Image 1 (tube, rainbow, N blue to C red):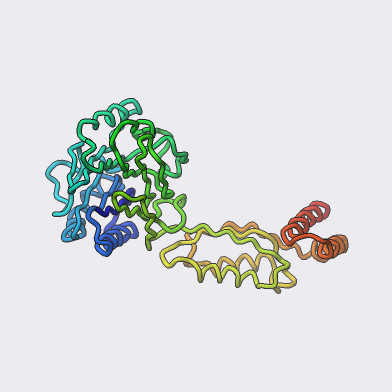
Image 2 (image 1 turned 30 degrees about the horizontal axis):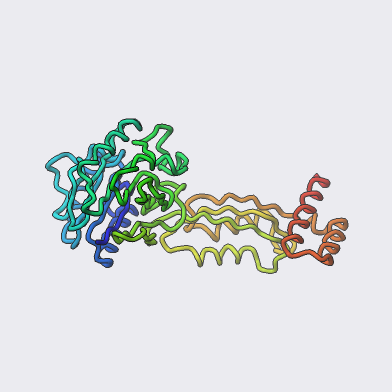
Length: 353
């Protein structure tokens, strides 16, 4: 059995970047000939979004060739009232009634605002449903406390805990996989106390600027480890470029090269650091920074952080030039030489201040 596992799409508008990400996930499901698409919470950003988008979703979620299981998350817990129709292939896991797929059993633990003791009780209550005659899979939306995440990893959810649990809760329970949602930033797995696997796929599209890098889904063939499946969806890409005045390549060309390598669905978050020689460049520090902003315009989601300094005066300082010549003639590797020159630059900067 093949399952495509995702979570935290946070749909808001028809045909925006998040909607397109969902369409691509459906396309991957068809290409990979999956049996089940498991959405482990927060399909919608808010309940009102579900009301507006449900008619459009029926088209996306019908005639897919696979089953779609949706688990309510903390953002859309109220979006799945009984009787609402999301498509012919869709089932909402609003309770702990198992879904059977041959030798695989899937059960959901929908999000509720409960504390850790209650979560433990609910997991233990599954003992009667999840027998050892099949592979058992739990869909869950909340925080696994064994993994370290910051508040930003959850899409800036604030300081409260969201249905927290621990890996030890699964000891002596026949749960082979936990397909989880709620943490946005990265794909992560951990082995449970019963040797099962707990899997966070991360969000399939960047929801905040904390979610950087190409996004992923979890392609799971039951009985095997999860597979990280790269998605061609909208995402933020953090790029740090440090300029070296001793490198021959024009620093503006260095930035252009980074843009050529940028994923077509990415928006860059640039940080420029290091030093330039304005005499060598033929432009002042301010002109150089304006040129950088012009080059990245249209590909950058925000104005770049520019921590660049013109050190023309330092490079022409006799003491610095003498020191650099000694370093270059010494028996040091390239990293050591670079570090020594950096220290000298800082020292001369402080002396001239």
